[in-house]
Length: 384
Ligand SMILES: NC(=O)c1ccc[n+]([C@@H]2O[C@H](COP(=O)([O-])OP(=O)(O)OC[C@H]3O[C@@H](n4cnc5c(N)ncnc54)[C@H](OP(=O)(O)O)[C@@H]3O)[C@@H](O)[C@H]2O)c1
View (cartoon, protein in one colour):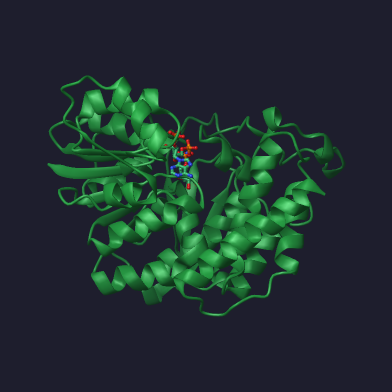
C-alpha cells in the first residue's frame, strides 16, 4: 500500500492520479491533498479519499472548505504556503505527486524533498526555475525524482537498464500543438479559445497554451537537462504530430530506443506512482493496423520563438530560466484574460529576459527574487 500526498489534486494531473487510486484501492492510499480554487471538488475528494490533511490557498478558502465538509470529517484543514508545504511533506505519506501548475510548485516540492519523500514530479516549472538547487538537495537527501511528464517518463523508461555513459542524445518529441500548420502571418489573430484546443492531449489551461507556443517544449528541454544530467546540446526536439512516440534515447552505437503509447497521461502518472512496477491500466495500444503514419520534422524556431528563448535560457542558465518561466506565466495569464495577443507572449518573455541582469549559480533566495522581478517587469509590459 503506497501512501500518497497529491498537491494540486483538483487539476488535470491530480484528477487523473486520483482516478488511478480509485482503480487500485489495494495499492494506494491518500494521506494528503492540496488545491487552490476548486473547493467543491476538493471537498468531494476529501469525502471519497479521507486524507489526514488537506491544504488550500488561503484562510478564506479554508473556512469555505470547512463549511462544505460534514461536521464529523476528520481531515485536518491547513492553508497558505506553510499549509501547502506541510501537505507536501506530510509525515505518513511516502510519495508526493507535485501536480500544482507554475512556480507555486517549487516550495512544496522542496518541502517534500527535505522530508525525504519520493517525488513524482509533474510540476516541470520546479526544475526549470531551480533545477540545480532541487537536484542537489534531492541527491543530498537520497530522494528519487520520478518524472510524470509523458516525454520524461518515456526517456526514463528508455534508460532503464542502460549505462548513462552510453547515451548519445535525447530525442524529445513535440506534437507541435494546434498551430503547427498555420502560417505565421495568422498568429496575431489566434484567440485563447483556439489555443486551448490541443489536437492530442487534454490538459490544464496553462500547459495547453504553452503547447501552442511551443514554450512547453522549451520548458521540457530544461526539465530533461536536470532530470537526466545532460547538456542542452544533447537534447534534440523532434516534431512528431501524432504524439504516439512519447520520446526516444539514442545511444552511442546508433541504437535508438523509443517509448510508444496512446496520448493519455494516465500511463505516465501510473508509472511514477507504481515504479518500478507497472499497473494493468487496460489502455488501448496505438493503431498498428496501418491507419496511423508516424511522421517527424524539425521545429520552426522563427514561427515559434518561445522555443528559441527557452534554448537560450537553458544555454545561459543561472537565473535566466526562472525569468523566462515567470515572464511566460504572466504573459500566458494575460493572453487567457484577452489582455494581450498570441504574439505578445514571446515578445514579453523576450523583452523581460533581455533586461535581466543574470546571476550565475544562484541560491534559492536569488531565484525567488528573480522570479518576483520578472513578474513585475512582465506585468508592466502587459499593461504597456
Ligand atoms: N495536464 C497534463 O496533462 C500535464 C502533462 C505534463 C505535465 N504537466 C504539468 O503538471 C502541472 C499541473 O498541470 P495541470 O495541467 O494538471 O494543471 P491544472 O489542471 O491547471 O491544475 C493545477 C492544480 O494546481 C492548483 N493550483 C493552481 N495554482 C496554484 C497556486 N498558485 N498555488 C497552489 N496551487 C495552485 C490548482 O488548484 P485549483 O484547481 O483548485 O484552483 C490545481 O489543483 C504543470 O506543471 C504542468 O506543466 C501537466
